[in-house]
Image (cartoon, rainbow, N blue to C red; front, side):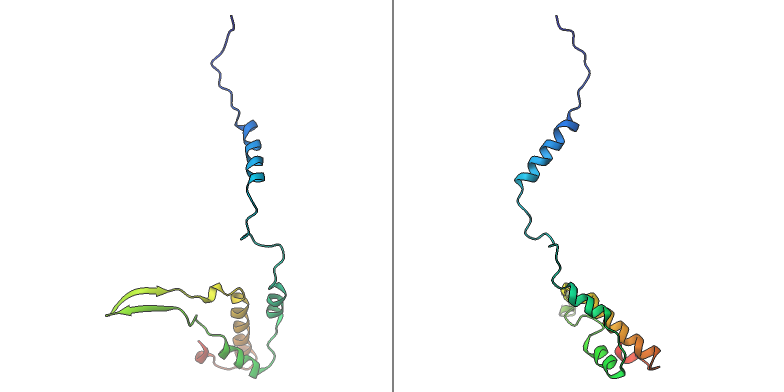
Amino acid sequence: MLKTTNLSIILTAFIQPETLEKNAKLSPKNPLAPSRYDVLQPLRQRLDELEIQNRKVAHFIAKLIPAQCPFERDIVLFGRTIAHIPPMCKLNPLYDQFVGLRFRALCYLVEQCGEDIQSYC
């Protein structure tokens, strides 16, 4: 007769790597996965490196780039808010660079030109 014991055998360490490899081989590549090359990176870098050295350019940039997203709205009907349209500016892939450029323009106007920037806020 065979003598058996009631010890349990744990096979997950042996089985799991094979199943993961099979699943990885069977699953197609995700077309929405981020690509390795960012097409907008040169433009982002150019905007980040742009230095403000002219008062007129600083005024132009501060007027051109809004302080808040102009598309964000609350839809009100009979005094009640029925819908909210979220800010769409954050969908812009260059949003952070434009906000940084506006900030640098305002800092130039305050620090170098000594101007009051209350009208831009």
